[in-house]
Image 1 (spheres, rainbow, N blue to C red):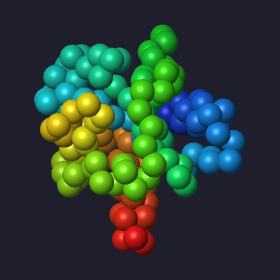
Image 2 (cartoon, rainbow, N blue to C red; image 1 turned 120 degrees about the vertical axis):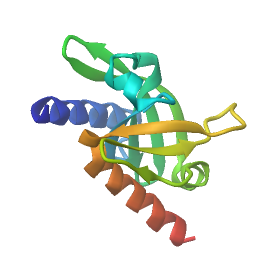
Image 3 (spheres, helix red, strand yellow; image 1 turned 180 degrees about the horizontal axis):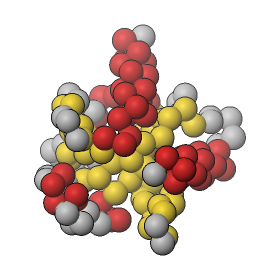
Image 4 (cartoon, rainbow, N blue to C red; image 1 turned 60 degrees about the vertical axis):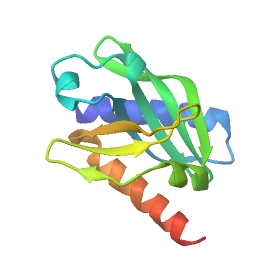
Length: 139
């Protein structure tokens, strides 16, 4: 998993660098949208409900996940927010044993969408939330 995860992170970072070379990626993690993380663990998670979230110094990007063989690659850019807007859209993080979750208001939705983060992305997710907290406190 570690080798595939490292390769996946590099691919996502390269995709983000190609979008704007002046705003390099700081952290990348994966999320899946599903009310029940157990369904995802049982194979219910679909690529359409899985994203890579990338934070840069100025932005937060959501890329669709494309599955290829045993690996995952970044697909099309679905949402992009400036960091302040992303911090306003994000609700309180709930840390669980196997996954964490947080509500996030996506464009076109009045209610927050539950974003789930698997245990394997916990370190990157913690870095992301700490960065957003620092950015929000600075204003």
